[in-house]
Length: 400
Ligand SMILES: Cc1ncc(COP(=O)(O)O)c(C=O)c1O
Image: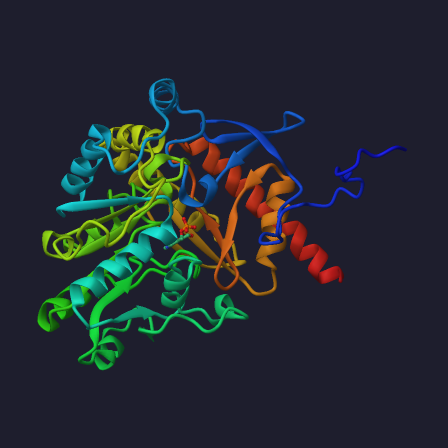
């Protein structure tokens, strides 16, 4: 067989992408609401939303129209120029959060990088940021160094200095860690990647009080929990507090790349032209979609997220499934702690074989982050398959 010079043939079906993910051998080519479709036309129930991203469902007509309208008019200029849609979105985010200023970037890790820089600029020499064990804030060096999970650091040292890690859900350990170099406490309201770990209800209030007392900034990472996921627009709003900095991404534009750092006036005052920036941050298409996303996450949608989330929790509880040791849930953010006899990665793969998309996280936790358009029929189907898979997996565990 002749081969054109300079072109290689991919005869071994090998991937040309760097091996950063163990990908399933399933390719989705279309989505619609709570469903995904593969190349062969098989229909899958999506209970993961691209890891807390497509909350408003796939192929949402209103979002498509917002994107198409923008694509037809303008794709990109530069943040050197004024943009009314960016201003409109920034104003909406300030109104939703109770804060005063917004910086747009492209992803969660970038939002956290910006928050770290803003806090240190504000700190005028004070630079230590306290974060929590098991946290996940992203993969770039600042966010990676903030993330207190040794397995993420392997091979990537030296990390960025200036982070102190303390146990999650433990206010005393934070108090003990504060010294004259401390400028901020950075925390997830629920630890997502660590297995949907929900702290005691007062934890965030205690951190807020401590920050007030010690004159520190409270940074809340809402990247996985924001935009309605937990039944409030932002998860910290369950606690009636106001952080100094909120970082967000994922659900903000239902799948188009966008991140937003929302901060108080006093933090924003530390930042001047040239302090920070991004070529693509706040690109017109993502911004157009995000403006519509904010409009679509109405109080009624938040109410539905709470009520359907409770139905899912009640349904699982009512089945008394012995393989589930704990149900961790808020709104439509679910972690099911699975008995260690069952390998949760294998369970997730078995779900995929049954045409249901689920995730995993932390220590043997099955993670569910369904789109907000999920209904009772979908819940019943999921629980039916869950029970069936446990039955089959228990049989094969016993047989082996
Ligand atoms: C809480 C939290 N922070 C930060 C990130 C990083 O976001 P991204 O993957 O968009 O960089 C994630 C991603 O899972 C996250 O869950």
